[in-house]
Length: 217
Ligand code: MN
Image 1 (spheres, rainbow, N blue to C red):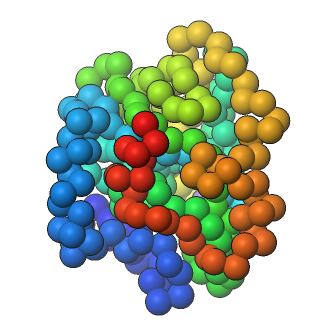
Image 2: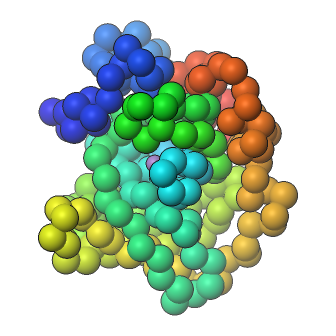
């Protein structure tokens, strides 16, 4: 089970993060036809969530074989060519996760505010993303609302704490840094981190993510 670790870490009775269960997937079968248009052997959807947890970080999630392969990036994606930032490879997340933002209640894994910071599609420029993740090198283009351009993920040697550290490197050419205003604005709701943390509803999702994302494209 690719989502086993994701589910083990969460109690779905106290967080409204999606469990990514089969029933849900079956219900959204109608949307799968749509998603095939962007899912290909060399690419798919991507999201970046800004996550104000124990430490603020950005979660980069790339669609790989029906789940969201995920990296937690404390400094976010670099913009200047050659610049590299640490990216910790974490557990795969269900596709529905890409449509959510809000607050994970205290006491739960990853407690804190989550903003849907950017989304769109990506393409791997060398082979399939699944192969890239396996081999520890993935060069890809992002076609997002905020970020456009090429980056490369490279796996480092694991550390003694059992983490799976990678680097995300700005490859290709420099990309334009995100403006201060856009830095603090959700692509889903237009809200700021402060507004998201103050809203009572814990999670925002008008529909399951595949439709949500494609509607905005
Ligand atoms: Mn996170």
